[in-house]
Length: 620
Image 1 (cartoon, helix red, strand yellow):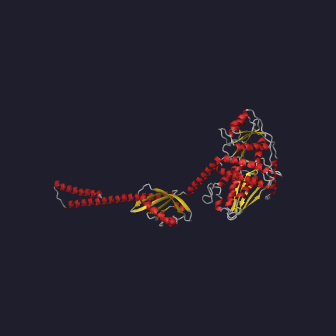
Image 2 (cartoon, rainbow, N blue to C red):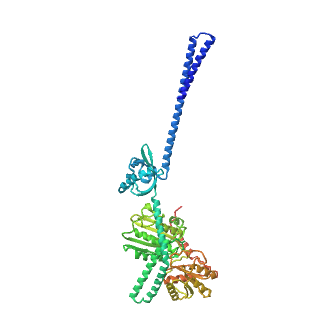
Image 3 (cartoon, one colour):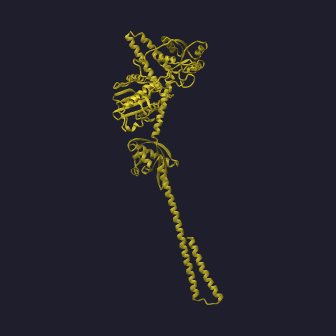
């Protein structure tokens, strides 16, 4: 407007100057000042006024356009800001909820829809407490909101809190929220970003549970050695007593009860130690029928009598190649799961058979390669597994059991063990009709069919000399008696230092039988390494009260030496001694290969050929 006034003044000045020029011209020229001059003067003024108005209008129009452009630019910036804010809210990983100070929903992001199950149209205008908080907790939640509102208004950076909410379908949700308050036009707006931490918290709880189990394993490991030493003496001496009183039925019954109690104690120790099992696999040839027979005995003694245990074991089963301890734990885990699925009783079936896979069949069950496998099947008639869960049952930390009744690691450990062994596993389940787990383990390379009249209880002794190193006096005396009863000559030693002195004196012996964990600064493994370094052909047999001794790790001169876990029976001791002594070695201590035989490969080829002949061929 100032420019318009200035322009008007300039035009008025122009009219005055024009008039003055006419007057001066008249005065100098002496001509009369007539109507023509007056008309010229008025025309000049009118033109000046008209130009001034035109210019003023042009200036005003230009200013209005500029102001309109500025307003449009500001509005566009505001729109862009709103759109950017909406884009940030929509693409944020966390849900966004905006309410007024009374809890009425003003904004509801897509993530909020996914988190809560309530759509945006349903949520807008609703009470957020009514939507997301369980009815018994609503009053307390509102009181908490009212108490936090003043604090929220005074804290520019907002506050963080956790809360238990309810999904639209009734499931509980644990959330972590970041809340800020904004004052707009006399109204308080509350902005909340919400993150679902249900799975995270569950994983943390499972981790804590796993750590607790590991701590229990470490705690029990400290006493396992001594406990198993005692059990070794008990189980061994009771065999001697049982043989002495076998003609007295009353005393024979008592010795049987003591023996069974010792076996239960050994099983308990083994179960406790399994919590801390983290060593590399030690695969060996396994008779899975024997393992399942042992498992069945344990289950019969511990399971409810309403559960019937059925065994369908193939008498001509091959030997499998896997870690015996890990396989035992895996089968026990599956059996316990089957028991839990049959609270009202049912039937648990243990079955084995030999299978030969082609490439397609091996891929179907997840096995490592085509070839010969030993199949182990554990089936129940329980509640079954929902199909929605079947694909996730091997996932770590996934469990369908109630809180505190499972870590969700059992089946994932079974899966990992089977896959690491080069085998496969599959599950078949139907709700209300039970579940079947099938494990496939590779056949041992040296595997043969079980011979007719096979008797694993047969005890074979020898005449060799054995250096027995055991720090526990009672165990040392018991082992000495058992070794002598098997025909062996025994040189006892209380620790590694004494054993080294015996060897240094030149005392001859054929095998070193030593405990691994011993006092005195030198453990059994170090003792064996020193002796084998001096005598490469020396045979070594380790023993330990730990189910999986961490000191019995691969490496060193005694790598591959067998381990006899305490407590053990006389038959186990005899079998392990012959296994150690009968392996042919050369002067350098290296095993001498046995004569090569194609019998096993021939049998496998003939079976495959027979299977191919029985398969109908498609016509071309």
